[in-house]
Length: 330
Image 1 (cartoon, rainbow, N blue to C red):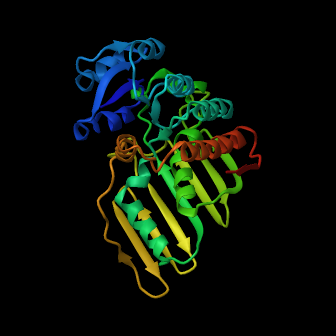
Image 2 (image 1 turned 135 degrees about the vertical axis):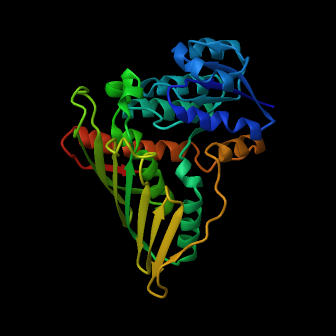
Image 3 (image 1 turned 30 degrees about the vertical axis):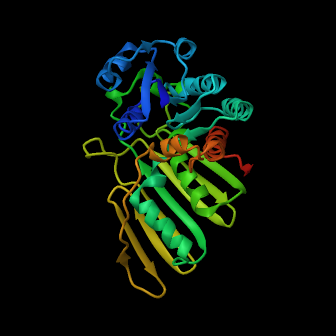
C-alpha cells in the first residue's frame, strides 16, 4: 500500500492527483494540508475524512507517507519538496516546481541526498498527439528535427485568481507556463546543451504592476532551434484557454501538433497532408504511480524535472535582465 499525502491545493491541477486515486486501489490518501481554509473547503469532497492540516511540517511529523503531492503557492513549493524528501517520500509536483534557480539547487541537493524521486506532472508528454508525433520522429518520417515552434495561450480570468498570483510569489510566466514546452523540446530532441534567451512584458492589467502577462524564449537545444511563447491574454469570452500547439519541422517533413484540437497534421516530401491516427493518451499522474508501484523509474524523473525547470528559470532570468544569453548543459 502506498501512503499519499497532498501538500497544498493552491491550483486546480491538484485534481490530476485526486482523479488518479479511483484507478489506484493500492494508493491510499492519508492526509492533506493547506494554509488556506478556503482551499481545503474547495476540495472537501476529494479529501473525504482524512486529517487536514494548515502546515505541511505538522502533517509530515504526524504521518508516515510514501508520496507527497506538492501543489501549493508557487514560491512555497521548494520548501515543501525539500521537507518531503527529508521525510523519505517521493514527490509528485505540479509545475512550476519552484520559482528561482537557488530554490532549484536546494531541491536537487535534497533529492540526491535522500535518493528519492521528484517528478513534475508534464502532462503534455502523455497527450495522444504527443505520443503519435514521437512515434513519427522515432520512425524517421520527418527526417532530422531542425525547428520547433510552440504557443501557449491562457485566459487569466483574474477575478478568480488568488492575490499572490500577481506578486513576486508567482515567479514569472516563463517559469510557469513555458516550462511545459521546454520539457517537450528536451524530450523530442534529447539535447544535452544549448542556450536560451527570454523576453516578457505587460500588455494589460495595470492594476497588477508586478505581473507580466506575456513572454517568449528562443531556445537552442543541440542542433534544434525552438521558439516558445506563452501569455495570459487569450480572449476571456473563449471556452477554454485557446489553442495549444507545436510545429515540428524536419528535413523530410513537418508535423503540426494541435493539442487542443487533438489533431496531428503531417506532410512530407513523399506524401501530401494527412491526419495521423492517435493512440490512447495517459493520465497526468499515471506514469508516476505506475513507476512507484512497480519499483521502477517514471519517464519524468528527478533529472527531467530539474532540467526543464532550470532552462525555464534561466529564460525567466534572461527576460528579467534585459535578454541576457544563458547557457545550459545537462
